[in-house]
Image 1 (tube, rainbow, N blue to C red):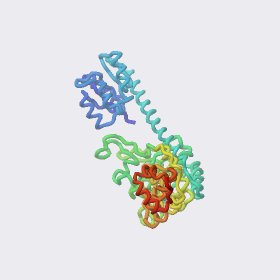
Image 2 (image 1 turned 90 degrees about the horizontal axis):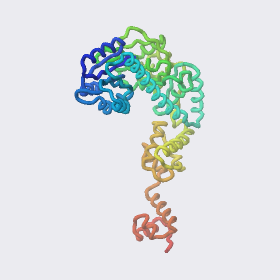
Image 3 (image 1 turned 45 degrees about the vertical axis):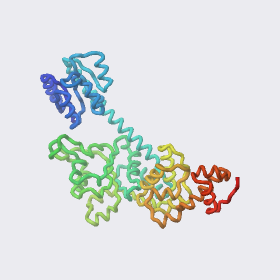
Length: 448
C-alpha cells in the first residue's frame, strides 16, 4: 500500500531533509511551506499522514486541525521548537496523534508514523465490520412463507458450503443481493469482504480500470495506483450485479481471470494472484442474451455452475402480506408511530396488485404511506396514493369521499352520544349543516 505524507513546515532545510528521509523509506511525499498551500493540497488530494509544524507564517498549525478534522484526525504528528504542555494538550484534543519537539528524533518519528498506519487500518476495519453487522441484522430478516422462497433459502445455505460460482436470476427488486449476501454470510469467507458491484452503473470506458485496477501513469488522469475490485475483494466474495450489462470486450478478460485466477492491472505487466468467490446476478435471461449475441457463450457456461431463479413477488403471493406487515413494524420503529395493520380491503388489493418493482416497490409503498398516516389501519385509499394504480382496479376497494364522510360523521356523533353542538364544533361546521348531512346520510337524529 502506498503511503502519502504531507509535510507542512516553513523551514526549508528541515522540510527538504524530512522529504529525502521519508522517500528513502518508500513514502510518497508532498510539501507545503504555509497554511494556505497546505489547505489547497488537502482539498485536492488525500493523505495518510500529516507532519505539521505548530507555528506557520500565516496561521497556527492547530487551526488546520480544526478546519479539517475529518482529514487530519488520528493522522497528524505535530512538530515544534516551542513545546509547551498547554500546546501539546490542545493539539491532542484537536485530533493530533503525537507531538514531537525539534530537533526531531528520527526513530521516534518513524515509530509514530507506523502506529498511525496501523491505527488507520484498524479504524477502517471497524467501520467495515459495523456495516457488515448492520447488513447481517437486515439479512436475518428475510421474510417469507412461500414454498419457492423456502427452497431458495435452503439452496443458498447449501451453496454456502461450496466455493461454486452462482448466477442469481430475477426481476429488479426481488432481493438478489440479499440472497448473495446470505450465501456469503454462511460461507468460509464470511470474515472477509462481501463487495457488491453494479455493472450497469459503471461507464464502459472505466469498466476495466474499476474491476482490475491500474498503476500510476497507466493512462491520462491515473495520478496514483488503484488496486481494483478484484484485489479489494481478495479472500472474500465479489458480487457482480447485472452481469449482463458487462461490456463484451471485458467478458473475455473476466473469463480468463476465472480460469487462471490471476489479474493484470492496467500499466502493470506482472500478474497478481486472486482468491475470490464470484456471485453474479441479472434481471435478464442470460441464455437469451447469449442467443442474441449480447453475452459470450463461453463465459455463460463458465458462470453456470449453479443458477438460482427468484420468482417475482406476484407469483409468490404467500409472501406479500408477511412482508407488508414486516415493513409496517420496521417503519413504526423508525417513525415512532403505532400503525396496527391493514384493512381487509387493502389486503385484497395488495394480493391483486402486479408488483412490477417486487419487494423493493412494496417496501417503498409502505414507507411513503408512513409520512402522512395518522390513524390505525392502512386502507386502499392509502395504497392509491402510494402505488401506480389503474382506476378500474382501485375502484373496487377505495372508499369514496362521500362514503368516508358518512362514516366519519357517524363516528363523531357516536363518540359524543349524538350531542349536536359538540359534534358540529368538532367537525368545524354549523349545527344546520350537520342536520342536513345527517338527513343526507340517514344517520338518524336524537334531540338534545
